[in-house]
Length: 125
Image (tube, rainbow, N blue to C red; front, side):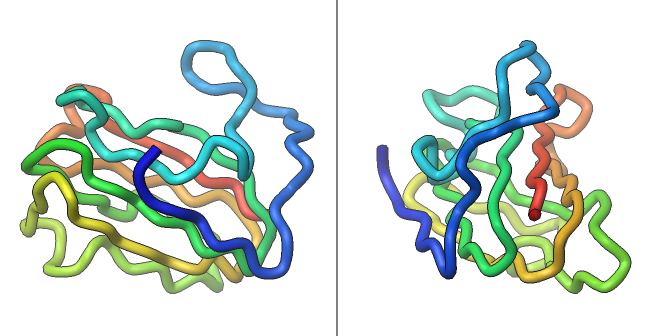
């Protein structure tokens, strides 16, 4: 896998109560980073991730013309979309990092491909 996720202080053990859209458990630190458009697909891989507060997550673009826009986040959170606003897109090789400090559920999507189901969720414990 390309990219990294830096854990600070720790990532969850992988115990999951939710499932991804295909019924599998959410990803944990062993499945990171989040790939944006792997293999030219219109998805985030994994599309559901559980981490501990204080974890830096890296989104790594694997194909072209994608972005990461905030759909919803916890009330006290201030996570921005990928740089440049919702209209800016990036190509393979681009990386975007964010440290998730506020516990809760963060939902995001790719603006150009939202209608095609390119969405993801990060749960911060």
